[in-house]
Every structure is written in C-alpha cells, then in structure tokens.
Length: 144
Image (cartoon, rainbow, N blue to C red; front, side, top):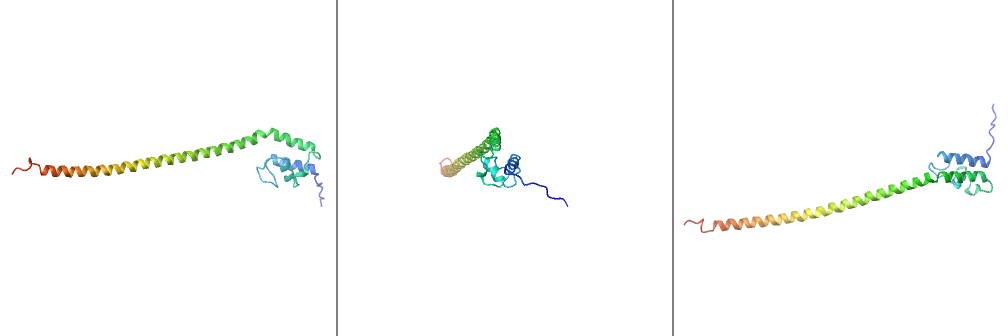
C-alpha cells in the first residue's frame, strides 16, 4: 500500500501555483478572466489578500509586478476594445435615432402632400362641375 508522499506546500509555493494558474487563465478559486494582481494571487491561493506581502515574499511580489508591467498593454487593449465597442454601439444608436427622425419627417411631408392632393382634387372636381354647368347653360349650346 503506497504512502501519500505528498508534502504540504509552503505558503510561497501556494502563491506561485496560484500566480501560474491566473497567468494561464485557469484559476480554481476565482472566475476565469480575473486579472492577475497581487491581491487576486492571494485570493486564488485561498488566503486573505493581506497575506501576500512584499516583506515576506519579495521575489514573488517583484515577479507579479514585472508580469503586470509586461502585460499592461494587453490589459489596456482589452479596455480599449470594450470602449470602442461601446462607442460603436452608441454610434449605431445615434444613427438609428437619426434614421427614425428622417423617417418621421418624410412621413409628415407625405401626409401633408396627401392632404394637399385631396384638397386640390376636390377643387378640380368643383371647377369641373362649374365648367359643365356653365357649358350647359351657355347660349351657344342652346339653339332654340
């Protein structure tokens, strides 16, 4: 029967494993996509964020800070992508509002034009009736 020869990990080893899991985006405690920070490394290791102190683990904290400096651009680019998406969505919403305003203005113009056509058609009918009456009653048509 084999013995469990696994030695418990030291605090620094737990922090290092947590750091590697966060870098690989495969955390066990935190959600995927959680940014790598000193506090999140401690949380991923199952400790209070105040447990990972620079005084106790200076090399590890320097490694985390170096990683953050090197990957700062990638994190900002994600933020910039979200900002651009928000602006694009806002632009789409503004375009939609503008198109709706144009549609409403065109519909109003069309309604006014239709009303004017109805008025003018009635006037034409009225004038045609007057013309018919005038031509019926004119002396040229009466040959008596």
